[in-house]
Image 1 (cartoon, one colour):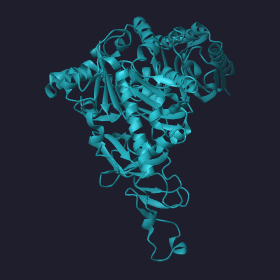
Image 2: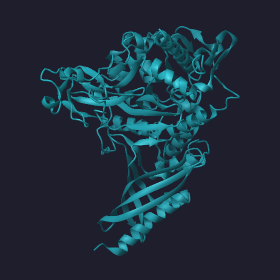
Image 3: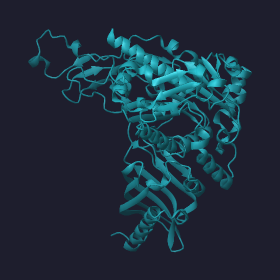
Length: 165
Length: 443
């Protein structure tokens, strides 16, 4: 039997992240991440499957430290990025949340996601994949220490950024 | 003559009058794409892959030459071959994976089997369907007309009517040499790759590469975002990103290399931020001071017509283009690095590559958005001309001092990377190949 209160707390936390992204509340979203947070979207290998060693293999996104995630949001704020002005509207659907490990100071959880994004330029796009979270317990809630995102799509139609997956 | 056949009318090339412009219908006319398939993609050398993808016998890589599926394979004798990726029986796609290793290729449709020499070695139920003396070699795979490589870059041609590869690469060779050779070790594709599809004609993206004019404008936000990150995190050494090319006035140049190949370079304000810099003492033993200045001190960008881009600006990469339709194209991109480089250098190279170049980076998405916008505007037929006259008055025939130092002889040199010299060279070559293709078709 899963630890239902923990599952509910983790689910609420993940749903909150999704909502902050969809409402484009960037400072509040960034607050969910620890200073040393890792944001990782592996790339794919030609022989199939995902890259697995982020330091020495290619990634779609591999950011170590919240400042790097902030830089992505800073870029939106310049209003000079044609790909992100205005940022596509998104709806994050997060489901299938499961607790993989519950430690005294951390929780590992996974979930499935689908993001529908819309922009005038590229119309509606649907991406999907899975999340693996390493959450740090903090003040009755969590901070994201690590978020790994696997993307189903390996031929990328257009482009995407941290808030579109 | 139908619209789309008179190709010379699409390129208004009058340099003495200060005019060079192209008719934007070249981006959206289906007849032109059809002629490009025949004249360019099936009528000359195309880049296929890097040989580090297929190091061992049986290693294969499947790709396309224009619209034709092909695969490259390392044969048992160590040589490279490429075949049409169509079973010799009923033409089913034979190799479905992007890359892998196989000693033989079995067709998923009727089970015909081929070796790495393209020979049909077996077929199911031969004795009940064909005469006893039937020669199964008639099912052999069709090799492409030419395959050759230069310093690890593998090229192929669907027509035999092409010059030797070295002659085709021509003036680009010294620039390829310093791209390939700075480290004593050969280059390898770093594990992982990216494929992205853009809603634009392939030429829109092709001309975006040698166009340095856009960089400080389109990618100003990249420079600003990196500056923000480095200010907050206090980056130093290899973890620093040199964005000086986007924000400062720097020395630079731009070349029409001939044969549609292009190059530009810019001075690197912070050469120490690049992984290769750590090897400067080793390099000094092997290269002349002029070569060393090129390798360490200059960011370089080379395109090989019609489908390859070699980039040593923010990081080192290869990029290959192909049309998927008149208004759709595919890019395959790889990070490429010296075998056995120091772990911290490899990591820095990859992070800089991911930062800028991928469809999930902080710069390529803007190039894609710009290209897709240009594609939409190509339908503004009432204003058909795309003007590429920048730097015409400053262009000089032949090499400039920097080119002479490295020993290459461009057709035309210009003293700024943001001149449109390179792109004009691309379209002059495009027209030549289109005309040659039309002659061939009418012969």
